[in-house]
Amino acid sequence: MKCNEIRNLVLAYLDSELDAKTSQEIQLHLQSCAECAELFAREEKFNERMFRVLRVGQSTPAIWEKVESRLRPARAGGWLLRHWKRVALGGVAAFVIAGIAIFVTPRLAGSSLDLARAVEKDHGEFVAGEMRSQFVGNVPDEIAKTFQGRLDVDAFSTRPAADGFRYEGARLCHLSGVPVAWSLGRIQQTPVSLVVFKRSELEHFPKAKERLDSGEPVVCSNAGRYQFAVRFVNGYVVCLIGDVKRTELEAVLKTVRTPTG
Image 1 (cartoon, rainbow, N blue to C red):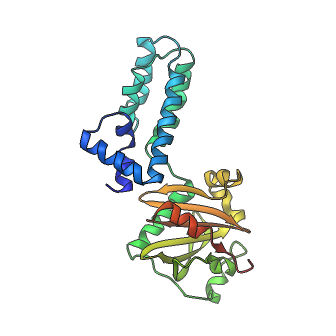
Image 2: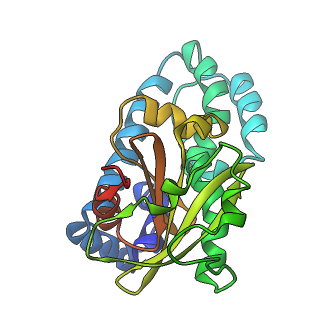
Image 3: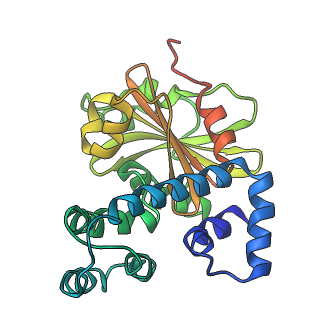
């Protein structure tokens, strides 16, 4: 089984809902894949914390009836309902549930950074052969004239120094109205996109801004079937996305340098 298949089964596996053969395949995969093992461990710890909070007070049919009606339409709600029926709902737990019903469900469905979601669509077009480079090398004057101070030519020269990255050209794109330097390339034979824009534009992506401003050197996220990583490089925000291992993506991203160092 591949990583994306394994990760789609994390909730069912933790809930012991899978058959013996599938569970064994997952266990073997987790022994050899540190990234998936870490993901499963995080989800298990999250479940334990949630249930400790919910095991407070006495359960009452009236409270459960209200909570169940709120959760029934929610995605992945079946998993939550089965577990919450087993714990006492009352006092503090009833208050916590109201927040978890809104917050936890999308998290378990596989949340991703706002910036990762914005990049995912265009990268998918690149992978499908629907996005091609506008130029290779220097930025044409007609493109540079459109920057209006929101981007500069150095953004297009900000690229990885890693030997595993092969540059195939670039184009000017816009993400949520933000002009970005989009470099098309490959890691080995896998298409990857390098996206660079000015740090001052990061406010258009508040979730990514919060994570990066917190001091995380590299912020990673899922972006559909792709892996996504982003970091600051001098005055730029630099993103890398592709269907490659997260550790490999991070390693290449860490070699990105601007023309001035």
